[in-house]
Length: 183
Image (cartoon, rainbow, N blue to C red; front, side, top):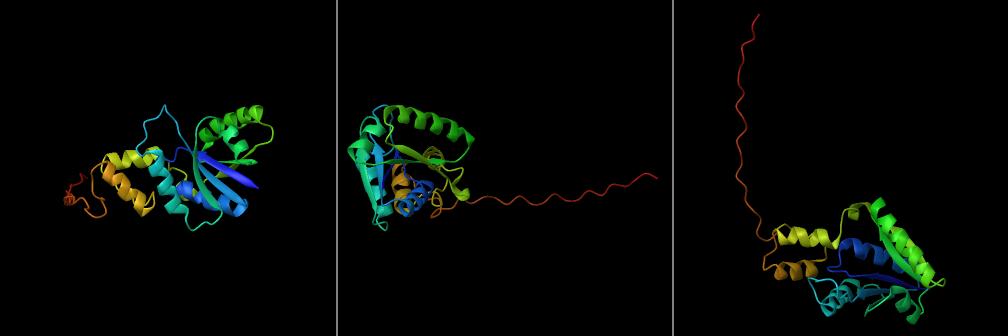
C-alpha cells in the first residue's frame, strides 16, 4: 500500500521525520510530497526542501520524495496511493485535519486519511516554531537534523548558538536580611 505524507516541510523537523519513519514501517511505500504553494513565502525553495528531505530520509529505502501542485487527492490518485498520512499534535490539529479528511473524502472515496499521533517529545514542534526560534537567535539544533539547522542559520545569517553560546552574567544571591521579631 502506498501512502502520501503531504506538507510544506519548510523546514522539515524531527517531528516530521518521526512520522515518516513510523509511516515507513506501516506502509510499503511512503511518498513525502512537498506542496508547491504559490500563496506562501517559504524560507527554502521547493528544490532545497526536496534535497533536505532526501538527505534526512536516505536511510529509509521505502521513502520517496516528490513535489506537487494542486489538490492532494489528485496527486495521490496520480501516484496510485490509497492513504494520506497526517500528524496530530493537539486537539486544535484534530479539528483542522478532520475537516480536511472529510473534504478529501468528498473528492475521492478511494483515499483514506490515517492520523498518527505525534510522539510526546515533538508535540510542541512545528516548522513555524523552528523558524521563529532561529529568527531570534535561539538554538534549533535539537529540533531539526544538523544539515537543516545549518541551512536555517545561514538563511538568518547566524552561527549556531551552540557554537557561540550566549554568556550571561551571574546575579549574586540576595543577602538574607535578619528581622527581629517583636515579642
